[in-house]
Image 1 (cartoon, helix red, strand yellow):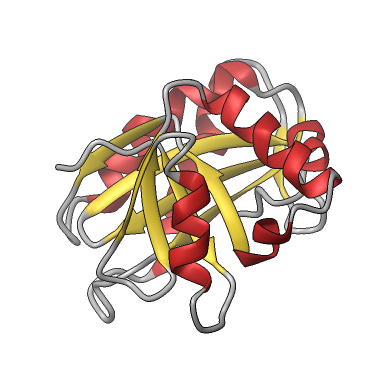
Image 2: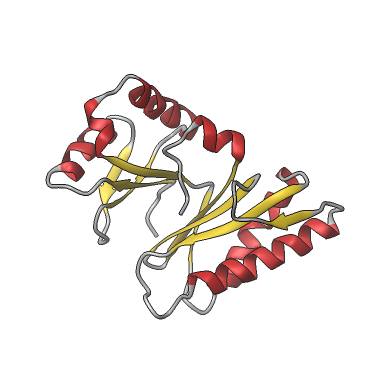
Length: 180
């Protein structure tokens, strides 16, 4: 498995991926994947990396327009299509401790494994699991797709998956962090 903690998508257009990678490689290790306009990277400090991107956005740096989305992930793991839902449940259960009452949803951005992994089915299973885990912890969490308090993001690149928890304040602070 590769060592990555950030997924970056590139805006569509000729030359954009090379330009963007040129800038991102100053901030960490970044490389292309086998998926069009999708790069993975490893940065030492994700908070500092995101602050650097936010400064580039605020200051209108031309290369920032080559950026599509950025998803920092907290952990990564390898999976098979048959094990993804169960492994993801285990990986994200600790997120319940960081969630207060409110709304949430699970988003799985699948790259590869077409017809082998059904994103909505995995999202539903993981969401139900988190709701039960929250109830066991004495918290009331409701599923909502309209500006939820929390988004549990799962990003796959082939048979590797990264996951993260984003609250509303984080998403407002870094508008380029947009789980689908």
